[in-house]
Length: 295
Image 1 (spheres, rainbow, N blue to C red):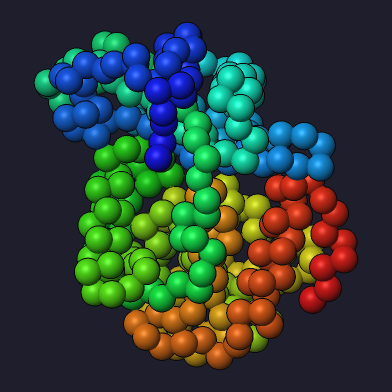
Image 2: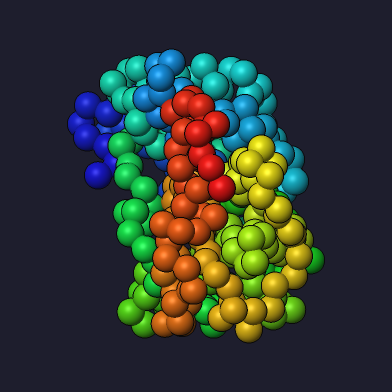
């Protein structure tokens, strides 16, 4: 699914076949989850292949490393060029790009002396497949922000996400919605959350969530379309009175939510603000005008 015998990746300054790439089994990232990564999408736009929000993603990769003390010696502009070369070498246009900063051998709980960079790409459809999602409130909470650097996209953080998603699927749902340590709505395991109520969009404020790049893109689209967005603490009991809701993220893009804990929303998705945002987001990544989108 992710690579074939002909797939090319970038590893420590060189392009090579994925099947020839190797890592140290004593890697601190493998044993302790001490690494950083990004998820980036490329699209066949009206102006050719375009890596969407490339600088923002690579800047965040550098920030993530800085926040947790992993040395990072690459400039974003150089990594953007690597990403485009990677797409070309693999003959990809609509693709998902995964840069990963990982550490070398280290069995102590101090930063490893060696740090490596891998970047790969593959064709990947929308994370949730494009259908209306049925979510449940997870028994797993978002981590305490005093225990983690939640604004850093760090590999070990996603154990929390795997637990929440796995639990939801065992219960018969598509995915989970996690609360924060104070009992307010946080985010889904791999995406941010928005809900519509009374002609406004409401989304959890930063603090207990990863403030996603797609989340900010949605907020920017709303400003252009003059849709009010309120960042605040959302109580889970408020969800039942919402008109609609959606998830957003690089992998998920804009994913419609049908129900939470088997309680459907008031509006049909096609009539929701989220559907408008979904169309505008699609236009933006394809570098098309969305001036025709009418609220």
